[in-house]
Image (tube, rainbow, N blue to C red):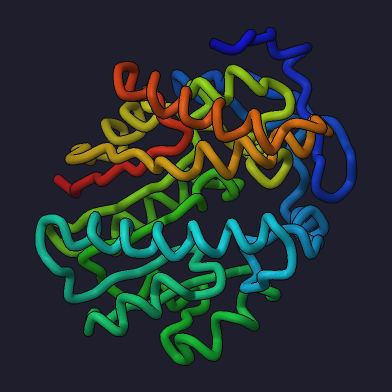
Length: 282
């Protein structure tokens, strides 16, 4: 349906803040995973989030993209809640990388003892009025036990993601679940937009996962993948943002077509733009 070009030199650009260029490198250990190189030092990462356009850390509705993001977020919150409650309602939950606190707030209203952890100071300012003392420091996170731990588009941001996963698993109650939402670089829209695919989001996204890499990590950490669910609207938002990066005059018209085709193809390939993995502790 659409012509797909090759990813040029595996080079991606920070379109949001600095304009710097980075490379996507095949990971030596985890099959199906790419890493962003060079990887910024942990002390440097904050500057790459320092933008009013980084809307996952805002509640604003001051631009077309902000309005669209907030509308999709409301739908996704309900969708995520249904996935978390799909087996049984948890008594305790942790949203690791809770952003502005909306999912924790939703769980608290459902009478779940829910907590959130968020390292970004701008997001924290918005989360605090919503969830108050249910915001945990990093050290507090690992002193509690949870039935469910969620990381909604978070794991790809964490430099030592494998260590954090290992430590979070220790915090799960027997039979507990970890739920990951992640962009999928094997999706059609990723192949279509190549270097401009917004979900590469280098260097904020340090790791780029696929179903193959998550299957490997689940086995490595002794988890069973119970469910894999699509995030349908991610294809639309990512495609619109990718068209913006391409500075395509007619991108607002092409993006929905690319997204619909990506979702249609994924009905057969299962390679949706973003996927939610529900993993149970053995």
